[in-house]
Length: 320
Image (cartoon, rainbow, N blue to C red):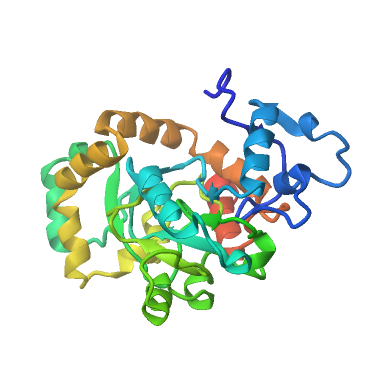
């Protein structure tokens, strides 16, 4: 998919990419988080032009703005995400005098989840609708609009650095679910400082993009949070299935057409392509689960007992 596209770099590294950041010593290899036993940084660049990236990095180290956005291979971002992010970064990080504190973190405010299996609670009205349509209307899967003000979801999580700032300027590494609690809100900092521009040392939710990201909740998920298996006995204990009295959630089930139109408009994802992806995943469900299970608890990856148990059940159903 990225062969011949020099501005896309595929790097062989087990380091978790959450907040690489500009290093204090300015080393390009340190920026890429090259393992200490690798002597040639180009040796782990599998695709793309590393020299082009190094030139851009050196320009940012000389006073430009550096933005790093996390995006897993099974997620996506709003069509206006990059434009919105760059505009805000220019407003607050360009010409920054507070060099030691010239950083800013952005999170998407809400996201839309795509599920191959039905994630909705089995209420009488939902069951009746599925039976009436013989399930055919849901061949492309199910969509759920979701927002959690308490965390920063991984797709779209962006670390930005102005002149003089590095990863150490932010402090200790935080998991994405700690950022909202541990970092100050940029809105609070703006009120205190009485500034509209140059508000730094804080985190900002991109409330203008609704939804800001699309997340696939499938067996490709490392943490397996809110991922359904297709087994009723297992799924009835997971996440959304338990919220039988949540009227806003149930309402979304009956607004699937509207949500698919939004997904097409803001993410260029059609129902036909989702249908193809769904059946590809279902046809290879056990193999994908087994591969995910092998990656659990390896360097830079998730290590949750619940996720491992669920993946094992999906990968080896006949052995349980």
